[in-house]
Image 1 (cartoon, helix red, strand yellow):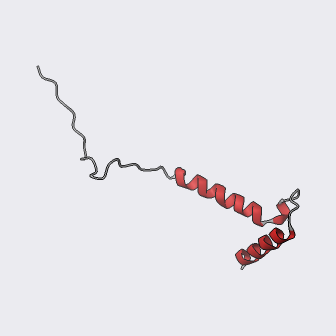
Image 2 (cartoon, rainbow, N blue to C red; image 1 turned 45 degrees about the horizontal axis):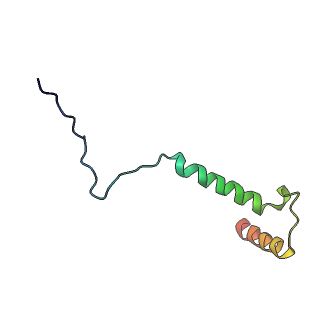
Image 3 (spheres, rainbow, N blue to C red; image 1 turned 60 degrees about the horizontal axis):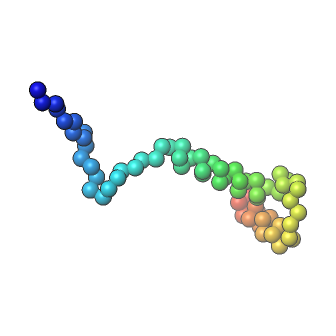
Length: 68
């Protein structure tokens, strides 16, 4: 008795491997980026941050732009 071979339900894509990312693979890095950007732009949360006045002024300008 011969055994049946299983074929693929869909043919392979012509360009190579078809990889699909789950939704959280894009959502989690985006959420982390937005969270870190918010912490950087909000100086009231950065109690221990003492830096160059030029950097502080740059961050204040960026915060004013995003607040508009």
